Image 1 (spheres, rainbow, N blue to C red):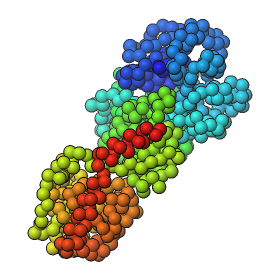
Image 2 (tube, rainbow, N blue to C red; image 1 turned 180 degrees about the horizontal axis):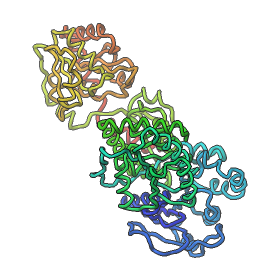
Image 3 (cartoon, rainbow, N blue to C red; image 1 turned 135 degrees about the vertical axis):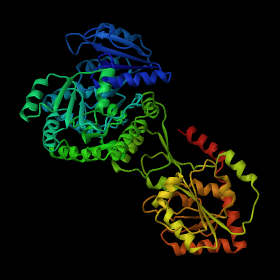
Length: 617
């Protein structure tokens, strides 16, 4: 079975058309992953005027009647394997209405990626014409589709407003990163704001951009605005710029492609995309890839990521007052160069993590090919809430089964009916090494905590415990450098019985030398969904003290192999530590119970349960 992408155009990544760029990237990545993929384009001409690519491309000459299917395209479809899945890109496209009927008649499946065509703002544009067109043509395109691949929440909402359906699948695009070794701009020159895209004044929010920049430039007269792109409304845009008397500050640079475009983006300091309506703007991702902090509207469907990664500013609506304020705020970041560099690095991290092709292709393949998709969820404490909603929305729409690492998570998150529990386990190598160590008896008992160097992980409470219990040694192993440790504890008094260690590659020696392991996370700020360090300690026969809420309580039976204690209650923590460590008989009982509990979390259990989960799909 193969996938055939159907588009208007030639999937040329060097053109300003965002849909063509995305299709090129998806097809390239699918081909790299040994997928059977082709791109079929309907265009004004069949000239091969695009770069070489790793996938087969077939171009068909567009007919005068926009609803007519070229005869050679019909022949190619009928020659395709019956298992082929056709992938439409775009919405409200007349030829797709005809192709929908043709494919259905000949028993072929197809899916649609509207690329923003169905989002709530787009649906309002030419509203009455679209209502008529929808009833006659577009409704059938949606009805006949196997799935509708939406790239943002606004598109899911828009789709359901005209045609409530469970076919919508929320999956973002990936992005093929460019080498950004020389991304950093000259921080000494006047601040340059930039926009790259089609000169569609209303859709792209260019009227708002000009109005807001004019207001900002009165405060910062040396600032510049570069607009890269072209379109039928260029003269109208020039008129708007002149009306604000900022022609000397705004440069219209025309359409640029490839390295010429990339070099311009590199010289920009801040990227601005105030769209009223978008699918997912590739230009924003390109700018972020070059380390440019971005100002975007929520309508771009990327604002939640900009907020999550602190990669710029997201304004809730395309509003000139909000945008002007964002110009001022981000210019202050620019003037504080350390903050600007940090935000630039955040932008790059956003592209690296949020637009990872491997995960995205797996999700798309699962839905298009009808593969069964299983999600294994380890963590749900995700902020901001809108980003969590996006990720969980993807899981909800694409998953056939969801696996959680603790009963706590399973109860807390209700996404689909088919949800199961599969605990994390200790790998065989860890178990083998742990079991080689013989029991030992410290002259002075050691209390161990391994965690991140964060307040909400209970680092300060561990310090207080050490101060109050000088009869014991306290060892803190944190995921931080020596300098970060010095900075964190600079104003704190560290007692002699507290030893602090930076990031460790091998923690076995710490478990071996310990008598008790603790987790002091603040459960009001960070709920432990499992607690692997506690399980590792238990394999070393260490009793444990953990918070009273979260998946970690499933490892510790209160009063048997440890205790549940609120980390804010230092006195109770001290009391329980003393109860376990002062009496060797009590300690041995807790130690044996801890080890016995750890035996349940084996690779054998994991393999057996995994096979059962997969076979029951």
